[in-house]
Image 1 (cartoon, one colour):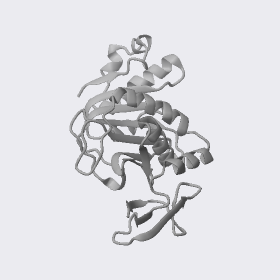
Image 2 (cartoon, rainbow, N blue to C red; image 1 turned 90 degrees about the horizontal axis):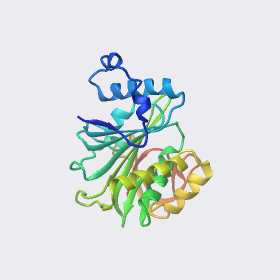
Image 3 (cartoon, rainbow, N blue to C red; image 1 turned 135 degrees about the vertical axis):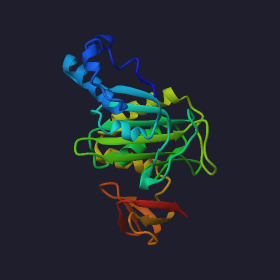
Image 4 (tube, helix red, strand yellow; image 1 turned 60 degrees about the vertical axis):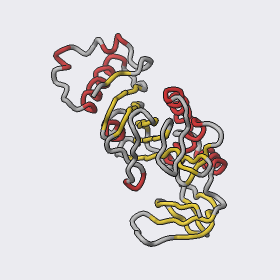
Length: 252
């Protein structure tokens, strides 16, 4: 596994403060090594700044990002155990997708905000399926997984670029350029005003106004079917007057 730092995030002067003696105590864990590097760098510069960890193959970018400080970004060429919402597998050949996790401050509507950010980054024609699947012409092109720890929120984004499984879509965009746009949009939307996030999600929605079937999380075989009327104040989907906070949606 190869680790390299983004060229625009860690200054050479900062890295020189990491002496050989310090490096000798770094474990074989990529996440542990990166955490120590960041800690030593912070002691020198005093303030955290966003840093990008680029890896070739990992089990999951979420796993690597989990112990890292706010502002960290983990990008991988390939995931051997990638997953999406509801523990669904995310599989793609190496180098064919944007696979990235951002370490952010917790936000009660981060899942929706990240969907808005990703849709804007991808460009026109990308719509949102509740809560934050990315669609092109009704086919899934990407997804978002938000995991919350006591102090951070790990926002994972996967987008098909040069390959897609049957029944899905791909974007055919340059990965680094898309990543740059996604970083900018997340900086804007992850901490935007709640009403602005909800309004933008509504504008991008491919779910509202449609007949849907929702399987609430933890209730296998039990469905709510009806018209997706709106989203609630914390991003809940309102189906014929019923609020759904978490579950799997099928457009009918």
